[in-house]
Image (cartoon, rainbow, N blue to C red; front, side):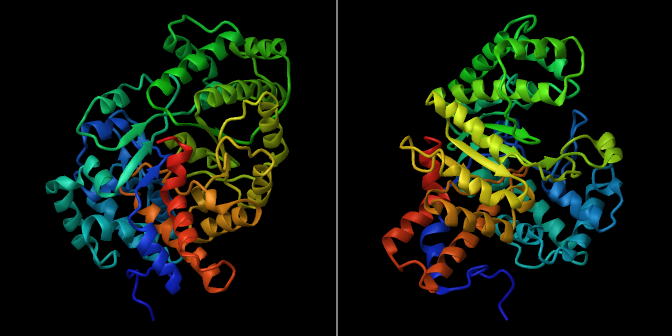
Length: 477
């Protein structure tokens, strides 16, 4: 029997162990997509206790922020909501989570938590209801008194070279500006352009948001579709000046429905008048805006990320009570591979297709995505069109293995830009270590089985590339 999470954790062959320890373990981290706060980075926040880091909760502005992976674990163990997102004391909330954690056998949350406890707090034991007090005291003492446990300290000791946050086009990026001007911050933090609210013409709040977008470009209102595209271009250019390397689109599904500018303008005017738009009209507007944005991304060397096939807020009662991003989302089954290809093809017609990373929450889409990639690669950069790392519910051993096997079968795994945290937690950089172990074990097994030669030079390039070097090249770090 192997020891629990020893130094060879998940590394099941001598080759896997060699690849990990020699090439993967010490590579820098490019966390090109996450949801952490640039404000907390600049202010170098110090957390009072481990519950604040792990469970989050109600913020000073009244919003909820935290790790909804952990919230789902607690709900699945029958924990009352008042201990999850409510106002119960942090010590009691942590106790409830510690009692739920042992039930996570086979769940990546069990590994993530213990990787974080070992790396950042030096705790070699196992967290459960009986050890919760010991862990609480140990973690809180380090968080409160160790200077390496501030936000910047956590990032630096994690060997993070680059962080791509997620930012709305109307954001003034004031915290990013402060970070850029602070010579004491040694790692790079860049905004990522997330224009979902400008695309969601069919959803409540669109009219109000377009008013805010107008204000962001110094206008009273955006009167026509040309005004909308001009405003988005101005904001993209501002983001690029602030170091933006990537955009991000969180789409229910990727649409493609061609329309003339006149048609799209009429749809926009209808929505701005407060009238409901049809599904067909929504797709025409979104397609028009996506094509415009894609061309700007290409011009400015910004990668386009597309996340799709999530059905959000399906528990209507809890979604109304707590709001979005609180743990009530699920895998969707939208079929839009043809539309993705049509969108890329439309951009490719004028040689304006940007670097693109495609993520589906539905693992059934892996092979379809893998075949889309090969249709639009070119000599601009190796792996220009990428199959994104296992996302959200696929961010676990089987999900990541399946994504990489699919990419290997249908494309070039060696050009993969690798892992990202997609997280709101400053402790989640251990997920890169988790990924690297899975990666090295997968490649190591192929070598052990005689399916790939034991070519040290080639293996070094592949492993280092997927861990960091490919992302460094792809995002022009």
